[in-house]
Length: 323
Image (tube, rainbow, N blue to C red; front, side, top):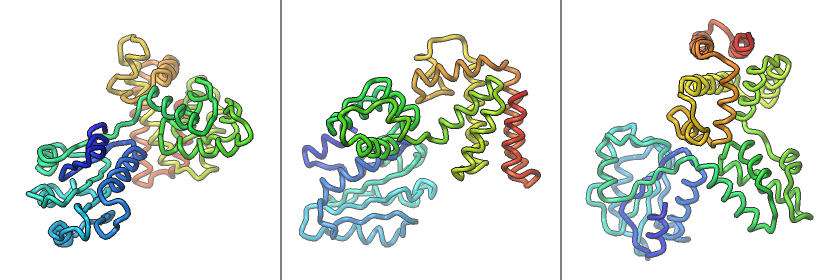
């Protein structure tokens, strides 16, 4: 990311920038920074492609000099160009000096010629999910910019409720700023009143209830999710992923949560969240977790093949996990 900022500062740009990863907010921020720096308000020299690209049309645009400007910019935004293997490798074959291409995808296939060619002539930046420390700093800076004081435990609660999603955090902070417009302090109570809880956190709470055999709480949380129209299949997949994480924690040797958070199974998870995983895993044996992971896979298959309804499948898995 620093390389992009340096290029913008020096007004010297590479032929191709490839941005990808989990952190959509950062990707969009840097996309907009590049657009502003390269073409500004001159929309004549900006082409944004956000559907299946037309190879011939792209080649024509690349070969068309900019209009009253030094550069022409093409943004190819999440069009799955890597799934076409090397069909779009022409993007990196001797592009004219006036062309800058910003390619955006969710994932990257490093085996392909296109990826390797971009690495040679351009810049590749993976926008990863940010650490708890970076997200906390981001929240604090946003609050400082609005003249709002906020305590560390309040920042942590925002992080917990949003699962560290920067785009969601920005939206929730806007709500908090409006809610506290007459005050210069954002409290923990304000966060409880205003900030929405992401589905992943609701599922976490549901598995907390399952771990401690609180059937009423687990079912209540499930029906709360259904009430806000969350898909039962999505809930099932998140539960399955979570129990996989618990199994990996249970299978790991004892270690501090800071080290566990960096483990393969919990990559990107904050230390305090890893601690919650450890606590939940303690309520199950390793064999039991392995059984549940297999049961989740079978239930998902039964739903896909129409043997049971999705709603019934989740209810059965909650009941099974409570045993």
